[in-house]
Image (tube, rainbow, N blue to C red; front, side, top):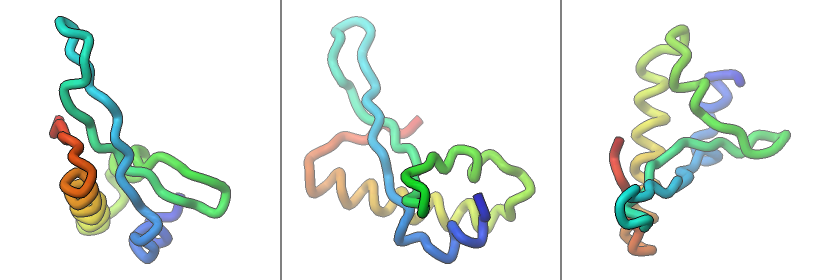
Length: 85
């Protein structure tokens, strides 16, 4: 994935809410926020983008802040409790 493509098209980046389960109660206690990107070939994880140390920190921080802002907005609108891990 081209880092410049991601940064230039942050409108195509979005949060994915992965449930975090309580082992004791077997209930959802929150959601981990993961980054996803709508590429031309389909939805892809932004995990490799964030883990690639060759990508400048500024790009990763900008993408992370964008996804976090979208996640917080969505969690407020849909009453989702994010779990920040």
